[in-house]
Length: 193
Image 1 (cartoon, rainbow, N blue to C red):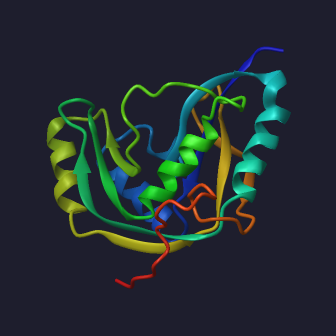
Image 2: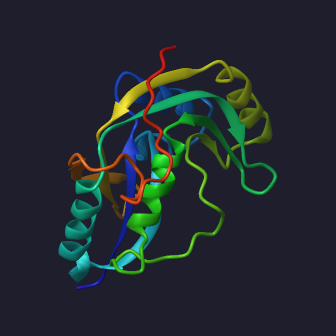
Image 3: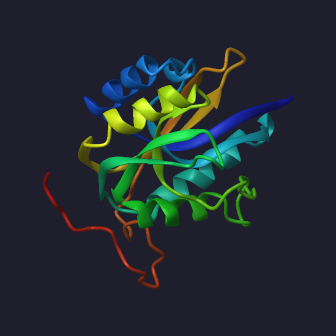
């Protein structure tokens, strides 16, 4: 059957998603229109296509154990010089994202994988472009802010054309917000910008 390249992420909703995607394109990032604006929970991962039903069942189980939580973005950051990335920071909801990504990659499921770098939730706005353009992205979005209630995540497949397409959305089922049921800290307070 072959393999597919999958990713799991939290979509940045409208109007924020389109705005950040257009800004990313404006900074000269050629991948901007092929990658929906998101917070990654599982980076690109090659999986045998026959495992897709097991992947979807696993993700549904993870989502069922969560409840909606506040996501807030504010300001910029960068992974340079380690990695050529400028991003908008996740300043609320990060611990929930960290818990979700661990559950998604759990050894009991079909998406086990090691990460190249420690997990750091963020929204990429420039990747692999000139240093000058990266500096511009960092500066121009330094005052950016957005907030929404995150109530789901989605499974995406990367096509041969390098475009990421949504396969399924997994709504949270009302369990604990991004934390194990034993009761770790929760990112669930609401703030307004």
